[in-house]
Structures are given as C-alpha cells and as structure tokens.
Amino acid sequence: MIKYEIILHWSDVDESFIAVVSELPGCMADGATYSEALANAEVVIQEWIDTANGLGRPIPKAKGRLMFA
Image (cartoon, rainbow, N blue to C red; front, side, top):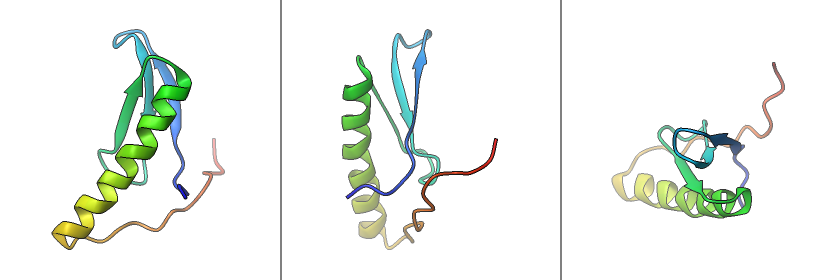
C-alpha cells in the first residue's frame, strides 16, 4: 500500500502528467493521462524502495498529506 504523498500536475513542456513523490528524493513518473501517471508513480515508488533497500540506504517514513500552503 502506497502511503507517500503523490503530487500530480500537467506539464506543457513534456505534454504529459507528472507525478512527484517529494518524500523520496528523485522519485517521479509521468503518463499521458492522470491515471497513467498515478499508476506509474506507484511502480517507481516500489522500485525506489527496492533500490534503497538493496543499497542499504534508509527509507524515509511516509508523512502523509502535507498540511501547509
């Protein structure tokens, strides 16, 4: 189950939706649709965690929804 916040936005430059997982440095995905970007983000989150585990790096604890503007 994914517990990290995923921020989705449209990029005119990339002509796709971008999904950013700010709690996992460098973790992001894209997709032609909002749903595709979200699904791709779920895949890369797991890949990010698997890679960090394989390298013996710490996995940040999910903070959930950010409550500031």
